[in-house]
Image (cartoon, rainbow, N blue to C red; front, side, top):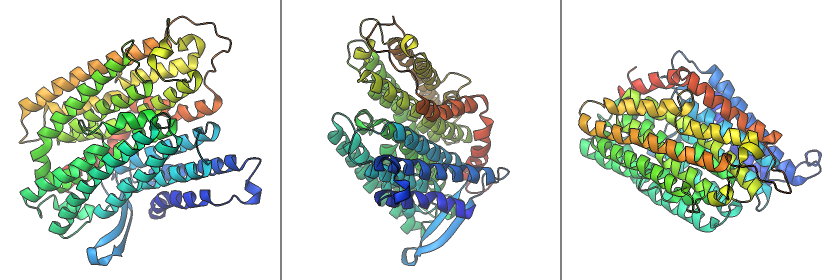
Length: 516
């Protein structure tokens, strides 16, 4: 177990270096480009298998206990250690990251985005995977920061070199927002480490803020929270996200929505809730307020983009929907209750599965039609995917109803538990205020249903138009890449106890100050 976790974090980096080297003569095949793409599938596949084995070997009877731990001194002068470990909170995110990266590598093998050398593309995806996996596995504040920053450069280049229109401006906006937020976050992390005398996240969580004064906790939560909120993204620090998603290649959008956004919310749960509870208590109502504004704002933006004549981009619409969905995650965290935090963690996984699938599908629609503009797709009578490519249309409708939180699918449980957490927030938080937040968020679910159903009507329905070339339906490689996401969305919706059984004991321990 200890070796497996280190293997999962380090091997993508080794694979990235190997991708840049010349392929051995026997592995080149007919095309060097295909050889390096095959290398990406092989490495990410090995990581996924290792993550599944790690999950199978995880002690499910004690999910609150840190397992597969490695603890090695790295910088003795600062007491910085290479400390790795997983519990019921981080394990699902680790497996989700490994799965989505493998599916992106598989998809790219058959449908490589237009751009420079595939060598650089594969290397960047693997570096991105390593940084994300490390973020969910490290248990040292400074290592967390390094892993958190490690993903920025590869994502910048994926957008800037393999993206679509306005890719340079979108990439710069992404890097500037996230870097500025990270600088502020680093100051907060240093403040906690210096005032408490350690950067060890387990020791700090066990101390539960007792070694930090209330004023230090408030300053630390403000500084760290800003950096995490940018990555989440929380309204009003979200404006980099729609541009980045619109310009990014399909696999870039899948990884950005399915994996990178989770790093911000994970930081709130892993660092701020247990380490600075007094500071979180102070800012919880404000975090909830920003969260519900984001829910309504994201939904209204999507409705505006879905309106006929607005020239709304379908990828941009899905990006704005992420602002709303991540608002539910932040609302659950802000309740500071086991119910709300469990809902936030469940919504994290559900959003990764559903929105990852949505971006895959929108990318496929764009490949077939040459555009993601809703007005162009709809035309006079609708894009009529049901008639022209029924499997693709059916999958798009499935992802849309999953995204709006249909009971029986994964999107339902996270949002519902976040609302329940707001109904009865933690002691000391204003219940009337949180009941107001809950009501506004519940209204946001109606808006979500409205814009998703409008998208389905405009893209999937309508008369089948006679055109010289029939639209291609779902291809074999697309079926292989999308089926796991569909299956897991249904499984998590019908059997939520699989995920909640992992997260709940760990959350209970986290909120209790390290005591089971």
